[in-house]
Length: 329
Image (cartoon, rainbow, N blue to C red; front, side, top):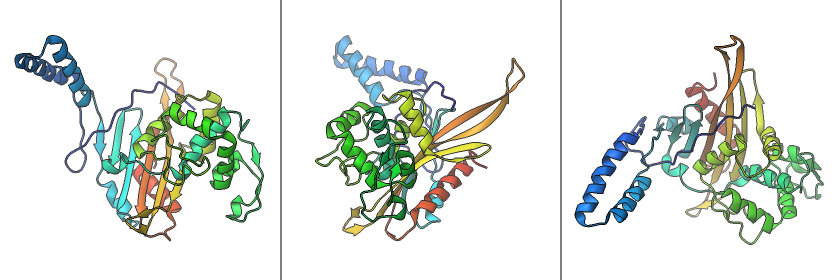
């Protein structure tokens, strides 16, 4: 995996208008506006020191930095094709420092991570040596659930089949104090465990937004999380779902069935990243080199159809959007 320098992550702001909208505030524009603000504050009677402090605070609140956030309202048609009205999608193009987004409000809202939390749970298990590696076997407890869960599983196998009982036992072995420490250190979502250590990512105690998921995944990709490179490398390898001749697709899904306005709904996640392989000739050596360009994504949607098979729909929508952006062919 090619890990380069990770640029500073941008904060999402409210976008107005329809279609594609790009905000690009130049530093020179910000300073010109700032000088006018400073002069106005001095006329009102503020001291130079106070006026300067208020100026800095204003610039911070107004995000006087270069932003490349583009809304993609047309992606709503892709969701509607599957009968989904309440949805969002965030896609971060790391190479061009751009964020493509559908439904900013929902992307900024926190939800239960559901089984996407297995990414974090795995990292903590490995880092604390509760799991020495991804081959840790947790025996089946004998309770009949899904067929793929009804057997002894390694961490890698449990991650692939999204075994809830495996990761509940892993969380119990990690313990509430240690788990809370890592949630606080990483600043994962709202960082709340609640009274039960083996259910908090399933019962709405812990919540995270799609935008926060993207930030977390970028740090995971670039080894910027406060875990060892080994732990992060193992978890990335477990996330790999498709390995083709020109791209690698990594993701984790999650599903919850919460009650909204008195009615049961299905809430679905898919979060991850895709590496697109690009071959370029080195200007100096004239040798063709292979580079992987990463894109990070988070999708979240809800449907009142509790019988909907959301897994293939998530994959279909994801690939439709990646093809639209010409990341996949």
